[in-house]
Image (cartoon, rainbow, N blue to C red; front, top):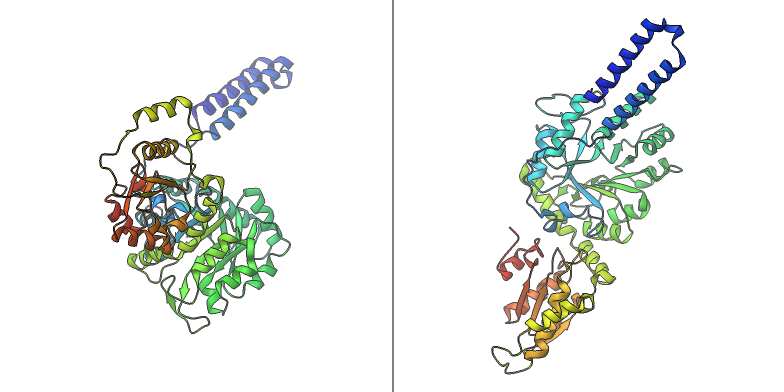
Length: 481
């Protein structure tokens, strides 16, 4: 109990005992009773305030690189503004013989911000119990502490059963809330869905009904339920049942809450697990369709093809490639919005414009032998650094006064594709930042342009651009540290 609580309750005890001694219990006068009630109210308020205090700070031991969300979609996908609002996890059970505590450390090293935990997981060596509703408060606190020090989250909590009675089902939700799991994954044969729906609303936790076969059966089961109750799709199970992932998506639509991602060599029972993107699942098309359908929020659990760290890492790397079409579509969406337009000098104050103009050179160091054109792009997946208009005005005025080049300001990615990019002599990246060049045609166009003698340059944040494209870093001569 907090000190404030102890003091308040001690005061109540003192007042009560004094009142009994002086006034004989039943003869306590009205003023004394009012004073006792006042002290009791203070105690309740103090206790409530103590409970609402934020948890103490925990020193981070996470080893994920700073800015990892700029280089991997598994770390960056959860951002609603930049990408998709999709939480990417790995199953804690992917690391055989390891506890949940150890699996969280593995996830951190693999630049994954969360896991799908299970009631089958052993908490840790110090708490050798299963992660279920039987954990005591201190043991639950130990789980929360471990999550915070590794900057990890439980994106989904899977249970084999919700229990046969209402009291147990409530306890399961309480455990999910204690570890801050936004999704509770339950078996397809879960009953009492009306009660489960009410608990989901009460605790603010979504419930995903497992779908390992034809998804139409799961959809019938949740018919009439609120949007808190949806589908947890096992893509490997769908494929084994002969259902293409994108066709299953067409059945569940916006009721999709969670996806367990695996790929198989063929549809039907004769297939086997293979690395993502190399099988019959057409997973790139699945995620592109999910993005275009506006499915969010969504939890994605990337499964492993084996039991080793290397197997898990291989599928995580494959997941990045599978996501390229959806990422490219998201970038095109931004370019088509006001946030994707060139940030012109009209955003600058008059004094800023005067200072930049005064600093611009009036002649080129070398007189060009022929007219040259330079494509200037300032594409970002963010609100845009505030210095971008300064740079654009600088380049505009340099061209005007020196005659060294003609600037063309545009974020149209088609201009970077071959042979369109050959219309320019150079490409300049003004503050370009994030995973913006995911279209293979754009990547091929830029690389070929530079190999054939085209110029490329940039400033500020460009080493934080395309951190999922090693050739870009080699070409630019630097990468985010």
